[in-house]
Length: 99
Image 1: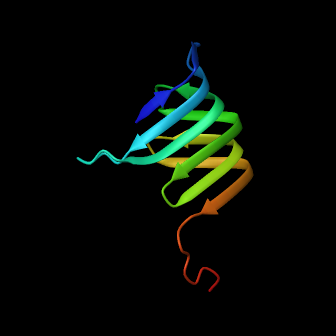
Image 2: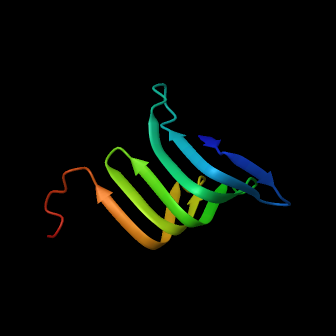
């Protein structure tokens, strides 16, 4: 995983990051990009490996794009939670989704 930002401001237990881009890799020998998370403003909690924010977020994988606001990314649990204005766009074929 890599975290990149335009500006980083450390505080007591959190680090504020402007223009954050988190890139998560597959972790195997191929080291392909698994997913990408982008947001204009976030807070990183280093001891917990949690990134969160109230502003917009965009989460991308090969077959899905999710946008919204008021979000949390827990790297340990491999979970992204979005609490507001959520929009999901699937790029994969969804067979019999309404059954």
